[in-house]
Image 1 (tube, rainbow, N blue to C red):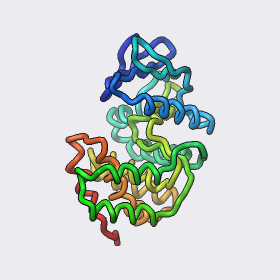
Image 2: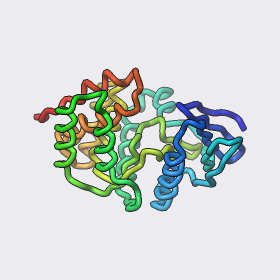
Image 3: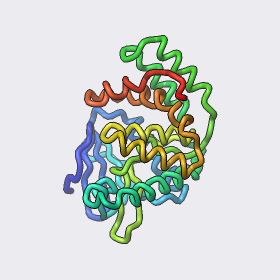
Image 4: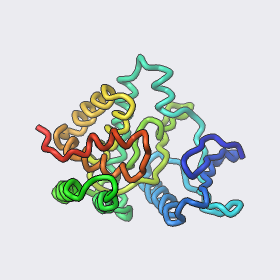
Length: 247
């Protein structure tokens, strides 16, 4: 097997027509099994994603095996062809809306997951802010749309025929599409605020969603991402954990 990517607590290998995601022995077994379950449930929606092949143990470590997709990530393509950014961003938002048009009723609920994450942040943000975040989250409408949880150009592979394939469903939930858009906005904003704003304008236009509605999710989503404790993201995310009413 040839290593093609290294992530925190996991290494991704190519093995012929398969991709093998090999987890470290520190990675919780329950999270690995949940990721495989997410992938299989999303696969049943008919979306273009790599097919799950197996969950196994290799040399004492848990592994998920799925189809290998030959191609480039959308992130790579945008870097190589920046003149066509608007076209790629349009395609990106259309694909996100296709994802959100699906239902996967057995997935975990987004609001439940975010409530748990906010509750776990006692060492990161004070009790007053956590209370305000919980209150805002509880007031947001309950939806049951499929949410990717980490939808960004690096998780879309474009094959040789120009077809997209969406990868990394470990954070998938069912919930409010605007929360998922807020997550995508923050991922863009970590690198390029202007591009993030362009994305949000396009998402809101195509989905007929008020921008203020997505913005109301930003403090909640930012707080829920703080649990990852990524040092280079912490200051940026904390700057968004400021519960105010956007005008």
